[in-house]
Image (cartoon, rainbow, N blue to C red; front, side, top):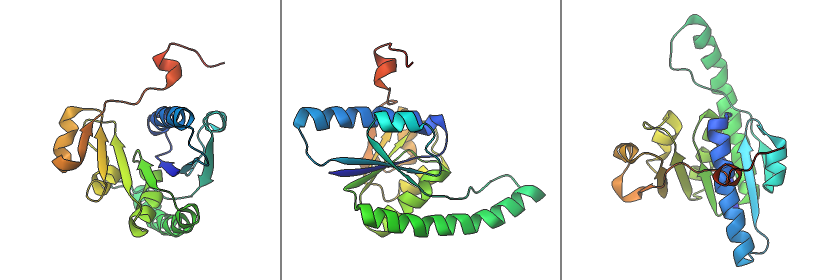
Length: 183
């Protein structure tokens, strides 16, 4: 079993992924699943220590970010970021193909786009989770082809095809759920 997790470069994407990974690791241990490999693909490892503690293998894919506001500066940044996104997608196709995961779990955000797009091209099932009451651009786009869509707020289901949505709430890390503090 191989699972790729991907999300934007913020804690709002990273920590819910870690919460899901913790639950997946519990299932792997309980069911004694051999050879399971979990990967995190993003433009930054965010917290290398937690990746290591969670048995997540990190794969870096550089990408760009498309800004929706229009300024002279954002115009030029978007121009160059189009090329970063293109090369990020090419890199992601090769990495996803070499991993050949059973599923890609995406939290959305600009850093998830290359891996999610590569999974789409390679026909690898995609599962997304949307934490906000209104989906971001990447999750809104991925919602068209994702096999399943998990949402934190029941209202968010209105943005996605009804037959794919599950209201799961927000993933919570074990140490928060049980009140433990990290050293």
